View 1 (cartoon, rainbow, N blue to C red):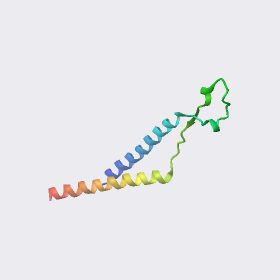
View 2: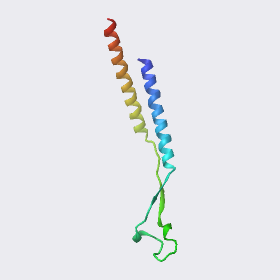
View 3: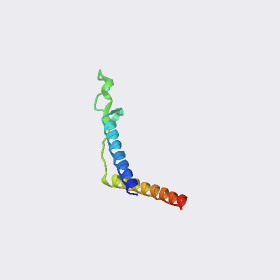
View 4: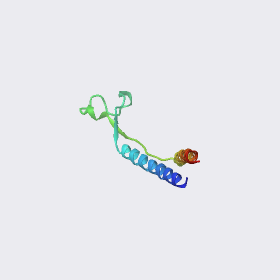
Length: 94
């Protein structure tokens, strides 16, 4: 049971680290958005009309509560799986 808890804990921590790394890499991407003409600061008669599009970067943040819930779910799933396997092994040998 201890091994299953350790594996599920390491799996949950690994999932959080990989998820944060991927979201951080996605946050480095800039998403171009076009501004409606009524909100545009560039006048309509400007020569460079393609420069109207702005780019926005996605914010990346990790909440402690969400990380704690994900670790708790990982430990719960590991505990239930080890309990079911132990119960099945005990019933086959006994």
